[in-house]
Length: 336
Ligand code: HEC
Image 1: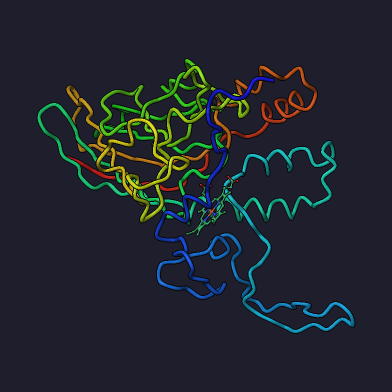
Image 2: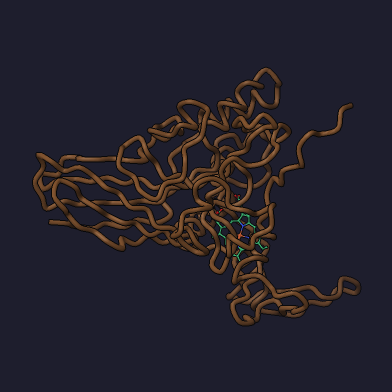
């Protein structure tokens, strides 16, 4: 066996990202669960919400002795993986799932609430019409305690921006999506390359996609974990307080975002410059931050191994599943 020629690439690093942010615990400080110390927020604070309706905690199994205790962390660790819950729900019998459909609906709702209410906000920080161009700057704020989207490198979040004129006709669209999970204009989905990170978007085929994209030891994009030698792009939104200049190699920002001055801890700004010649206002611009658990290109790559029975089975479940992205945040602005 030949030794690996490149240093191993970390698959997921939410703990290290958290430690490097405002949410992380300073070295040597123990944070008692359920008390807020300064900015520190533990994983449990966000992911295991406290019970409020009273509950029983057994503290001595033998002989059994229960004390009623409120405000304990519930064992509900949800993240953003709605796709897997959809697949479980669609295939309860085939997969031998013992949880009831009602339980899965509950968990799905918790995951959707986390994504829609606690993950991100959008603002329109600037909007103006100058000559034949409309300029709008969209601010994206990350509320999570680590990079967003988090974890496994198939997740992605992107800006879907639509401009309409006074008659309601679409003048411009970036980040539209198709039922098969493809993002229109993504060089990753269309050419198996990767879409760069942007500060300024001027064309519909330019899309701001927050994602981590792996590369193999030849510097080519790969979606196979075992081929990964590192990341060619990692512009996932940084948690508040994350200084990209002092970040360790495992959690570094990769690609154009490293040099983007307004891509900072907690937020990013993207400016859209849209030609409006021939259209009359008032113009309405809407921006949505969309989330998908599994990118189209990741699935294309997996599909290459669909002859393996378990992979083939997953691909079939995925093909039938609802791939509608989740809207994490939205903002609308009017310009005349
Ligand atoms: C301030 C709140 C907050 C804190 C603190 C926090 N998280 Fe999260 N986490 C979120 C939100 C919101 C999401 C959903 C958005 C996403 O998946 O990117 C999430 C998603 C995740 C996911 C993704 C799951 C999936 O299915 O994709 C993982 C894994 C995770 N968190 C682990 C952790 C760990 C480990 C810690 C502590 C080191 C932690 N989180 C601390 C808010 C938080």
